[in-house]
Structures are given as structure tokens and as C-alpha cells.
Amino acid sequence: MDGYGTKLYKTIMKYRIIIIFALTALCFVGCENQKSENEFESAEPVNLTSVLQTYELYEKSDGETKDSITFSIIDWEGCDEEIYLFEDNSFVLCVPEYNKSKEPFLAQAEDYFNACAFAWNVWSNYEVWYRSHTSDELRSDNDIMQCTRGIKAGIIKDAALRKAAENYRDSMILLMTIPIDEWDEMKNPGRVFDSFSNIIEGKQPDFIDDKESFQSQYDSLILDLEDWTDRQFKHYLDTTPENRLKVMLTELNSCLSFGEQCSLWMNWGNCKESRYDSSWLVLVGKTLLESGKYSPLLNRMWIAWRALCQADYFGLSRDSSIPNNMYNEYRRKCYLACLKWIENNPEDVFAMNCALSLAGSPNVNRFGSNIAGNEAMMELYNMMPERLNYDEDE
Image 1 (cartoon, rainbow, N blue to C red):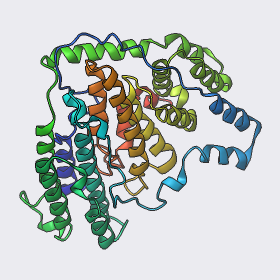
Image 2: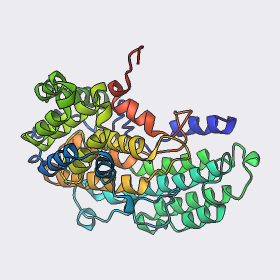
Image 3: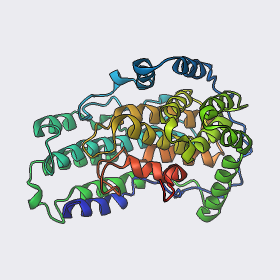
């Protein structure tokens, strides 16, 4: 990584827009609370019969037919075949039903989501520009700047936050007109982003008094969720390798709740035995995330799913196509599921944490802690470390 890239990475690590950094141990805001009585009372399970039918067809097929089945798991029409740029406000969240809610979290949910999305989408465009000036050209300067101008701050209702968003976008475009070697401490994209992220953070309401207590409760909750499906997961591990995938898909379709399915999906992905099941992990994850149902694992599952999707279908290079537009559609679905849950369970701070994590997590960045490629590999490592735990002989 060049000198500026190293500085850029250090700046990214300081981004305070990620109020809850879902790639590692989450950092929380909130108030003292005991575990929600509703934590395991999640929605009915998602019917995965269609996934099993697809698998049965896959097993009966060979060659190109098999390839076409795994290829069709992704909606390629929704992904730009070239290097994707954000160029409009298609990412906007519109939930007028919550704008006047007596619950502060719900009342501010729309602006928070849109401000975070605005920040990261402008940044993703900038990363394409930066890569184009430090490696092969990915997109032309005119394309990148024109698309970035098309991201309008009018989606943000709060006047001060909207003005800050405009300044941030315009400052980033201005930096694109200045040669990289002329940037300095004041003319620096990380500094511009940090300034805007501070304003977003200032608009975020506190809703927990005892952060340390909440962290302990959350850690305990995650352990409980991981242990929840030990029996089904052991069944998968004890099965012969050639039958494991079918056993797992059957177990997932036999779960008694959506939360149980999320737990088993995470355990399935977080093991070396599933390394060759990536396409099926993507398909099942996609089906679960599309359901509009809530689980305390939803934020972690979304990040793991998009990392698997990026690694298996689009690549881990800094020059890979990274369809953050598609990933963000699923981010929005999951965020809405959290808001719906919070509407019916206004004391559930775990759901609030899940929603904040979803909104505040970055797009898949081209630059970050992965010195050899994009950030999806590091996201996968943080969410599913056992998957990448190779033995010495491997």
C-alpha cells in the first residue's frame, strides 16, 4: 500500500460514523436494561422449500446446468457489470409513519439511515476515483464527479445535517480536482469525512446509561444464540461430507423460528466444512434477509452474507466490481425489520443496537485493513473466523 493509502486506512479506522462497528466486538450506546423478554420470541421460520427444490435440481444436473443454477442465485440485472457508482438517491429510506413517533429512536430512524447512506455512498464513489488515480483507470473523472453530484442531500430532513451533507459531498468533489500529491493535512478526504461523521454522531440519541453492563449482556446474548442450534449443527458436522449440504438445508427448513434459522446459518458459515457451500450460504442468507423478519443476529448476518457474496461472486480485488447498491437494498430490508420490531417492542435495546449497526456499517470499501484487496475478506474473517482457519497442511 502506498504512503497515502496507509494514512487513508488509519483515517478509516477512526470513522465515528460507525457508531456500532459490526465487524468486531460491537461498541454500544444505550441505557441499563435486562435482557429483553422477547429476545428469543422471533418470527415464524422462513419456508425454505424452494431452496431445497433448487438443490435437488442441482444434484440431478451436471456441467453448464449446475453452473447456471449457482450463477442464477445473484440478480445480475441489479448489479452493474462494470465498476459501480452511486448516482442518485435510490438508497433513500422513507418511513413517514415513524417521523412523529414518541419513541426517539424511531423518530430519528429515517434521517440517521439516510445520512449514513449518503456519507458512505459518496465515499464509495471517491474510492473509485482514488483507485483510478493510483492504478488502472476504473471510471473517468467526469463520470465519477457527475454521479457524485447526483447524490442529493434533500433526503435528509434535519436542516443542519442536510447542510453538512452538502458541504461534505461538495468538498469531496473539490478534492477530486486537486492532484493527490497536493493534498495535505487540511485538504484531506479523511478529514472531510471525519467532520461529517462527527455531526451525524452528534444527532444520534443516547438510550443506554450503563454501556459496560449492556456490553456484557450483549456478549451473553450472542453466546446464547450461538449455542441455540448446537444439536442441528452437530448433525451437520457428523454427517459424511457428500451429504452435509443436504442435511444442513433440511435442518434449516425444519427450524422452529426465524431466530433459530439465523443462528444455524451463522454456525454453518463459521466452519471450514462449509468452504465449498458458499453459493448455498448466499442463497439461504438472501432468502432469510428478504423475509422482513427480525433477529438480534440480523446485523451480523447481513455483513457475513455480503462478504460471502462479494468473495464468491464478485472478487476480493480492489479493482473488483463491488455492487454496494445490491448489498444496501438488503441493508434497508433488515433495517426496516428492526424498526418494525422496535415499534412493537419499544424497550428492546438489542433491536436498537442491531438497527444502528446496520445503518452505521460502511459499504464494502476498496481500501481498508486488507492490504491486498477490498474489505470483504476482513469482514468475512471478523464474522466467520473459523471458516478461514486453515490447518498447516492446507
